[in-house]
Image 1 (cartoon, one colour):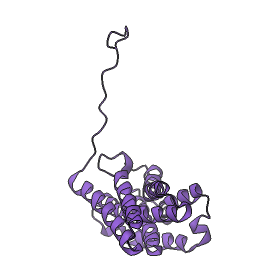
Image 2 (cartoon, helix red, strand yellow):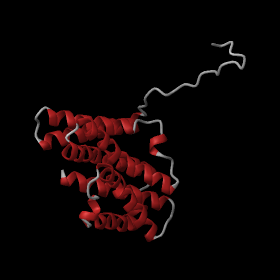
Image 3 (cartoon, helix red, strand yellow):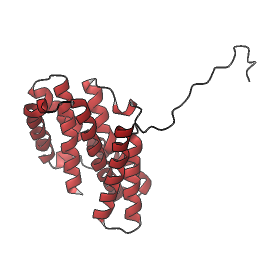
Image 4 (cartoon, helix red, strand yellow):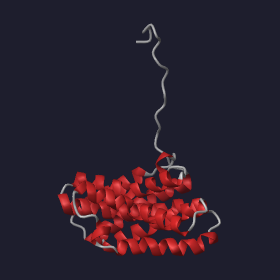
Amino acid sequence: MLLLDYVGVGLFAATGALAASRKQLDIIGFLFLATVTGIGGGTVRDLVLGIGVFWILEPAYILVCGATAIAMYFSAHLFESRYRWLLWLDALALAAYCVFGAYRGLMVTGSPVTAVVMGMLTGTFGGILRDVIANEPSVILRREVYVTAALAGALAFVAADAAGLSQILSAGGGFLVAFAIRGSALAFGWTLPTYRARPGRDPDGSSW
């Protein structure tokens, strides 16, 4: 589970750095955007759960974000389609972090419902923050399935844990479910049915 935590932070930090490269920011901009993206979801999770914020208790997470930002500053030019890479790295980060968020929620509260909500929040909030700050097209507003993938991954982990499977199998299953759904959405354009606006009522109320 600790590995998933570091993987999630590192991958989200990489997506933040890629967003910084698309905006042609300086090294400080890379560091800032990578760090905010890397720790954003976990910070909100820990604040909501009322526990010590993870990167304050263990500053090594900040170093992971910083090292990732510096590495991406010198290598981002190697990626031909940076936004496409950003989306796929985001999918990996979402899969890792939705499982770890669900694990943290389960360990702190013991509630499967809270665990699933924490998984969704942890897996998606960093990417949302990144897109808002970088003024990128928001992943949550894209038509392809996004939050649903985090929901499914968190549910799969909680269900496997409740069934008595080992932590490794539960975490691996949740990760694969989330990544398979999000990856398929990116590859094949999977969407959920959207709301369709209906004609409004006539002013005289005759359409009741």
